Image (cartoon, rainbow, N blue to C red; front, side, top):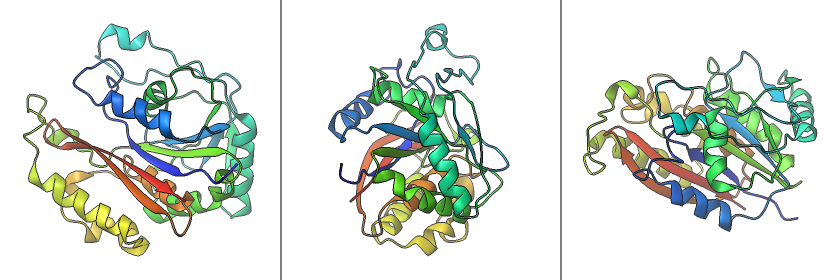
Length: 260
């Protein structure tokens, strides 16, 4: 099998699978055109721990880690098998890179199962999840991704799941999709230009260098998965950008594929 790409997904609201106003079809189309992986390793913004933890669950629970949404959302399940072999391999690679990592069973939070439900609705690809460290910086997560690189040569699709902009306090849930804060585009344009240029140093220092960084991300956790995905990419990656729109005025949904 040839090397798989690594991905960063902006998973949006938990209602992505049931809200016709959300770009669910783009996730379905993405899953259909990607090379089929033997397993998936998911790093989601919604599982944070002090140190990396790899989930060895044989049958991961579908975790409904949200409140106040429509009842049908809580009835959804994603019954994919776990990938404990991938979890143990990931932990081994990280420990070998002096990134202390443990392993234990854990379910799939909505940052993991929501996009996967659309991408692989048959739930027939095993999934392992690896936690992020919200108190650690982008450089740590980039190093995590670099340590995980060998998995992409072994049929494992490495996915970071978060949001390219994420400030719920700045969101206007009555706004039309066309009514986006122009500062969102200024931030995403800067970020994507640096990704296209392979300017890792600037990206790791985004909070200082990117326009409106603190407004777009009051806290880092929804952007940290992109640095793991970037680290997992090959040095000569080709960047593919899927811009799915800006919702609630401040919440941009963009997916990045690191190919090659």
